[in-house]
Structure formats: structure tokens, C-alpha cells
Image 1 (cartoon, rainbow, N blue to C red):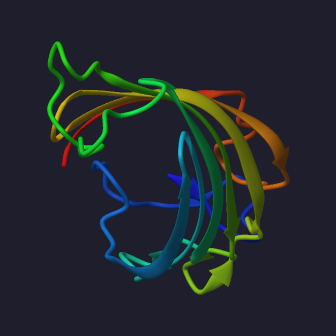
Image 2 (cartoon, rainbow, N blue to C red; image 1 turned 30 degrees about the vertical axis):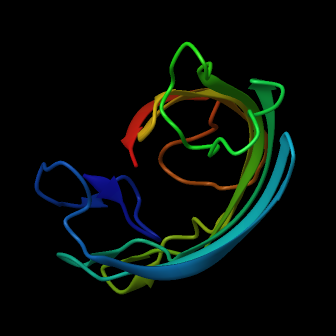
Length: 168
């Protein structure tokens, strides 16, 4: 059960499942500047949630900022593409990353009533990226909330961690 707006202990029953069972439609844009070993990026994204079984989770707007610093190699060899394969002539590329990840969530709707769960959360996420092969990215970060005023069933967020393998 999840509590609905105005309930006094009773809730709106939804079936147990992985995920919310709804569809999310969204779109956004990103812009990145690369200057030698430095990269700066800004991203904006909107997600619209569709209703499912009387529950429509709140739409979200994400605004993210990121800064990367290439730790190794200090410079690429002349004529060498930055995305070339790691080899004895070209070391593995390693980047330090710091991200500010902000989500503005609009109010959810449960059984036709507002859930009073709108709010904002901003995470600060230091991490590392490693390119061991030409088209593979290994990424890890730790996330700490620096601003949070979302009042929902999940309560206060304390920290998070992400480990990702991307095939590019």
C-alpha cells in the first residue's frame, strides 16, 4: 500500500512489481565544452509520467552540471584520436568527475488527489571514469544530497552510489 492524499492510515493498493508500471515520456538537451584536459557539461531533461492503476507519479525536470578532468594521459600523441584503443603507446584514459544533479519533482496524483510530494533534491557526486578500451567506459561515483525538500514515502536521502559499465 502507498498512502494517498488525505488518508488516515489507509492507502491506495497497487500490485507488487518492479517499477511503477507506467510509461515515462521525456526529452532534453545537453551541451559540452572540451578544452584540453577539461570538460564542462550542462544538461536539462523533462520526464512526463503516465497514470497506472490510479497512480501518476509527478513529472520531473532534471538540471545537471558536470566537470571532468583528464588525469591520464596528460596529453595525447600528435595525430592520435582521443578515443583510440588503450595500448602500450596509449595509456588508459582516466578522468576525475564532479557532478551536481538536481531534480525538481512536480506533485504526484493518487486516486484523483494530489499527494503533496513535490520538491527538489540536489546531489553532489564525485567520481571517476576509466576508458580501458576504445568503446568501453567504466564509471563509479558516490552521491551526497546537499539540498532536499521532497516530502515523500522514501524520506530523507542519505547517500547513493553508482557503478556503471557503458559500451559506446
